[in-house]
Length: 413
Image (cartoon, rainbow, N blue to C red; front, side):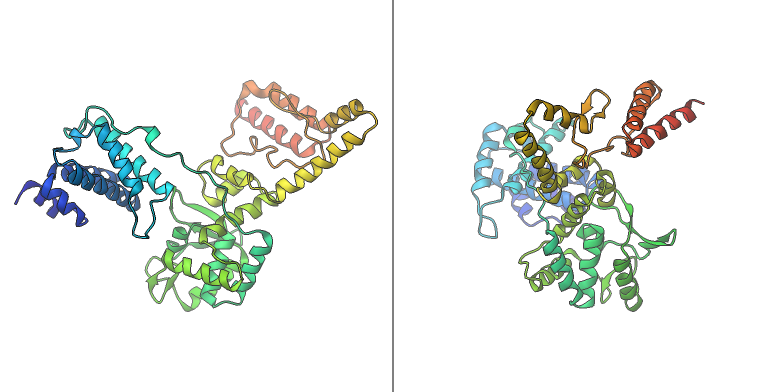
């Protein structure tokens, strides 16, 4: 048995397309499999599968079009350029060219592969990386798709009239903002009581972090009713006839209930976006939304602040009224001074002249963030901010700064 055949026998099951690669240029398979084994130590199986697909496709292209290459060590820039044109032109199993995100994912994965094997100083690594960042398409950044309040109410009404399990799935996704994979992986003891209220322990998911979130009474009741008749199977809270719940089943349920509500196609992840949008439009703080959704940074949560919905509409209407008053004022200069004086908020290095009648969803976002930290050298600034807030009868802001001053006094006392 050859070395590469023995390697295939000892390792995990490989896609049959690797057989052709092994037969013609075995070094490509040896290096790719070695890399995939390293990747499997630190990455999720889905990520390893995408890497396998990418390297298999590239290796097949090399075997079919450049059989003179002995391995990845011989890959040069012209080979990558030819592969790019080949990949974007091929037709997928769905009968369409690859989507832009697929192209970005595969080229990015290939670039990472070459970057790593060069950095790891592998024998089969080329002298320099043959694929560059400019080869990877820039990712689109569309606004999240969500249901507006009317659509969300129609979906909830359709769920209330649906089969018990369908209602359970819709209610839990809508009330918690969980990802589908997190719902499917809920542990048997995921629901617990804290200070007399139901909470839900969401498992480690996409971002490798678990979290506890409050559970709406309706969702808690539906879970209790379902699990009473269908006790947790093994380690899973929710199952179907003893079989684990999977994302395809959840997607079918959401599509079925959405169709009954007359909403057309709705994806389960839209319910997550919908909850975040509803929360931000009703004044929930961004850091609280980030905690609820399991975001690692506020940058991810800020996406929802860009949605042109009620928050933007209300603030635009309020600002428009102020602007209209400015244009109709008999003394524009006096009106400008009046607008600026209505709500002059002291910042660390300047002033915010936002009119008092307009709400700001970002107010105290820094001081209220879990990552915020202040130290003794900022005491004069905090004291000035507290005094300014008290003079302007901004009691909540004054309380924040006084609490920070008290904390500094306790730390230094």
